[in-house]
Amino acid sequence: MDFEKLADLLFPQVTKKPADIEAEFPPRSLPEGAKVTRFAPSPTGFVHFGGLFPTTVAERLAHQSGGVLYLRIEDTDAKREVPGAAEALIRTLSVYGVNFDEGAILGEDGKVADHGAYGPYKQSLRGPIYHVFAKQLVKEGRAYPCFTTEEELEELGQVNKKEEIKNTDWQAEAEARRAEMLRRRQFTMEEVEANLAVGNPFVLRILADGDPEKKIRFTDLVKGNMEIPENDEDFVLLKSDGIPTYHFAHAVDDHLMGTTHVIRGEEWLPSLAKHLQLFRYLGFKTPKYMHIAQIMRLDEAGNKKKLSKRDMGANMDDYTRMGYCPEAVCEYVMTLLNSNYEEWRMQNPDKSYRDFPFNIKKMSVSGCLFDFRKLDDVSKNVISKMDAKTVADRVTEWALAFDPAFGAALARDPAFTEAIFAIGRGGKKPRKDLATWADAKPYMGFFFDEFFALETTYDETYDRADIRAILEGFLSTYDEADDMNTWFEKVKALGEPLGYTPDMKAYKADPTAYKGSVADVSMFIRLAVTGKLNAPDLYTVMQILGKAQTEDRIQKMLHTLEESK
Ligand code: GLU
Image (tube, rainbow, N blue to C red):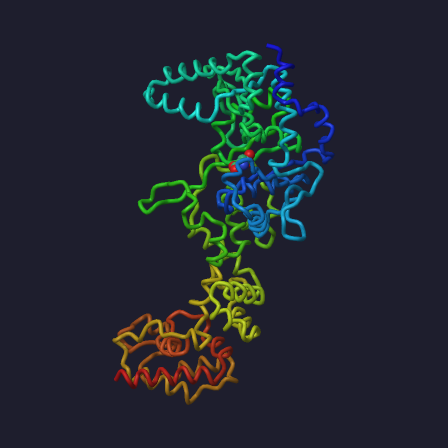
């Protein structure tokens, strides 16, 4: 077979040679050790939590080493493309600290446009580039056309199904595949010419030289050393519309764009032999590969399951809706990515996660477990370190979007809102009440009359007359100008004559000797003022609420007690 002639027949329009293309994509001049990584999504939907993972790794490795992180849009499957998905994806990732240096990134008009010297960064615009390399492979007898039409292929599928090679009969299946492959490879130049003359479409297939009995040794930077069977499948490089498959496109692009590390999900591991073969055929240096394990979750029965697209927490937009702050999500991702992250965090409580020396060797080889409880713990820590103004502003912003009535209340008097969030903040042991912005309402909604509600009533065992006497006593002695100590002394004094001792030690030593303690007295007042048994420091709550509102709430409780007499 005259492969030169075949190549010219198939790609008459292609005049450039691989060397011409190489010249258009010169090697990057970067410092020694700088890594070039990429995110290469298909714009088919939202960013999945499992997608943020490899992307964060790519971001860290690139930026930690003074390298480049770029975005390539893999839009070779037009049928699956969702309009606007690329833009949404870029915005979401940027919220989670993944910002691209180069690639198909957002311009000032909010639309995706190329930035950088290695474009186009959308695969659908790189057709002519792929065709140069495809032609070269044909010239070298490494790829061949296959004129089987889609209908014929479908029919073939039917036939195979009818013959139904039993799943267990691997050898028979392999032989059948081999026979089909050899049949496909048998063609004459005349047949090609005749097909082209009538405009029959063809797919371009690789001429696989592998023997699955033999193994390729390979080192994945996450999975370690592995042996994978060689590829003997004549997989498709170009589809009948001339558009490349992922296999072919990523090899050409990662080479020309100077990718040093391909970081992707482990679902690509089974295709690796094909990719290594392709890099070899094309004469490209193989990049380093890192295959990242799937994220797992626990199902109701406690079994590990893959975090699927439909699971809560899969879609990154869920986190915004639920009120998780991106800093917390990033922090959580880091704890999942590197086993020594939490230790580092303890030693460096105030540093940015970007200061952490991210290490590929500390990555989990098997799947990480996604756990909302852990995320909440991490998040509480992150939020506890923020100042009151930040928390107030961000809760307000979130609530205005997702709980407008509450948002309006928070926005009414920003200084008031900030004072509330200042409670218990800033000290050595800050309060950790909030895991999400949505937790703010149950925590401090009672400050606003419209969200005040009695969560519970007093326990039956308390004497209603005592409660009333204490609340009335409080009303007659409360002075907003009192300092905390004076205030507390008054609270203690309210209960003592009724048998509620201010001496906690004595009470603990013999609870039967008293009706109760000052803790019960405080609880009577707390429930009236906050509607809750657990609330932030009561003295401060009253200071922020103001005398009028504090007294009003106690009055209301007295009425309630009166009515329920
Ligand atoms: N477009 C591929 C995907 O959607 C990219 C895989 C890769 O990163 O190479 O998963």
